[in-house]
Image 1 (cartoon, rainbow, N blue to C red):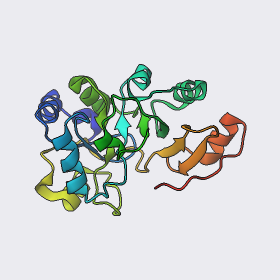
Image 2 (cartoon, helix red, strand yellow; image 1 turned 45 degrees about the vertical axis):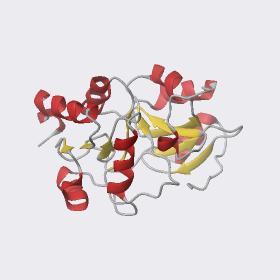
Image 3 (cartoon, helix red, strand yellow; image 1 turned 90 degrees about the vertical axis):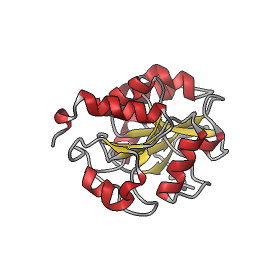
Length: 213
């Protein structure tokens, strides 16, 4: 099954599950994501429980439009818009100072939020259908490999997920690169789909590495 074979019906069911406070797994351009309405505390709690993810680790959000940065971030520096213009949609996650819209349950009570726009029509359709950014953490047990097929999601999470959108194998297969631009100097948190060297060339400076905590 390729991403083009995901039916309107599957997307409608997934959106309905999200709106009712359920959790879904869905394909992205990188790996399969585990999604929920970030404003629904019960759903966010379920994501942490299903993944066995430490509560000290924040959950990333996926956006449909660059303008959503103004919703999720309290400060959007000029470099954020430039990076978004160059690398979105795509495999670059940006860490920014969060806005009050982002619940503490999503940010692990921290003051930042990690966001990106995925390059996948199914993911964008889900975000637009919900009408807000969605949780975009990988659909795996914490510490395990990130799944690139629906079958791999089922192997790890079984029936814990309320609905799985089967969009075939994810085209990227590698998690996004995470760049923290919440401080004075950009720092590389995790290298992934976008090479660090490419970011350094774009920014015109060497990137220090930041511990992903």
